[in-house]
Image (cartoon, rainbow, N blue to C red; front, side, top):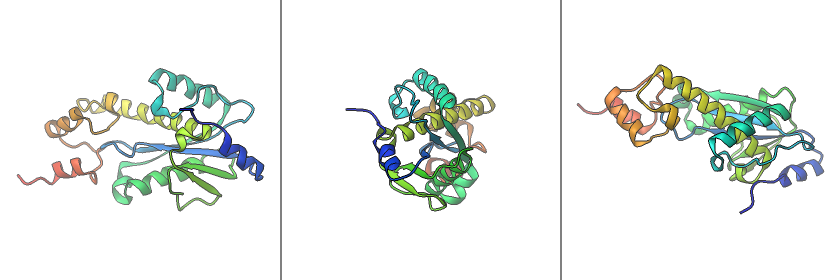
Length: 206
């Protein structure tokens, strides 16, 4: 199976779009922590070697590629908080993080390639949704790498403040040990109260 390529970007270039941002988010599934999005405008003449869906890369490879992406591309990272996730729902919060990441780019894109099947409704620029975009588009793959690295760092930092949940290993995802820690240690301010395992602990019948 071949990895992502630049064909969607080439098509857009041929249609007159010059600055194309790949956009992806990470952190829809965890029980704790923010959802993080990245927007990346690659330099077509200087695309890092080995870009792929972040889930298909080792941690060391992701970290190395993230450094190269930051050095060669226009990059913006943004988040939606646990409070926003609980208030809006995870899909809307993910889209809000994407909108913020695009808005934070120092160089304004004229087209966004969005990972997934929906375009965030708050976008004011042309956008195209690409299902499994992180495995198809190099720009989205680059965004997936940066978003994953940044969010993992946040969860590692939070793990130092709230030890016992294993966030430095599970990044807030509902691993068996994380769910057991929720039962043993209780709910932190960084847990998503709208997510069922957390909600059930908070409101269980004694």
